[in-house]
Picture 1 (cartoon, rainbow, N blue to C red):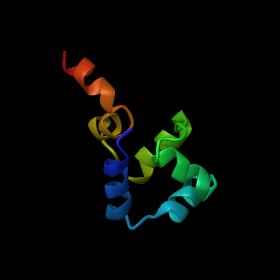
Picture 2 (cartoon, one colour):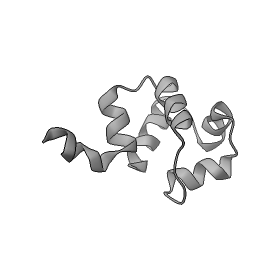
Picture 3 (cartoon, one colour):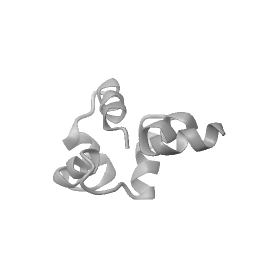
Picture 4 (tube, one colour):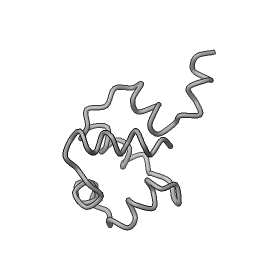
Length: 74
């Protein structure tokens, strides 16, 4: 996961850990752990973030699945 890209999107939409966590209906500490790589996002959380931030398919892949970009390009 590319936490820096997600944090930039959060800033673009004037979000912080608390506001995004509320939107996803999860605890702020849980979201922080996910952003910092201590646990993984669920598919429904990724979907919620994608909808909230109007992410393109490429943005979803680059934020949540950065290691697969090389596979897709092959």
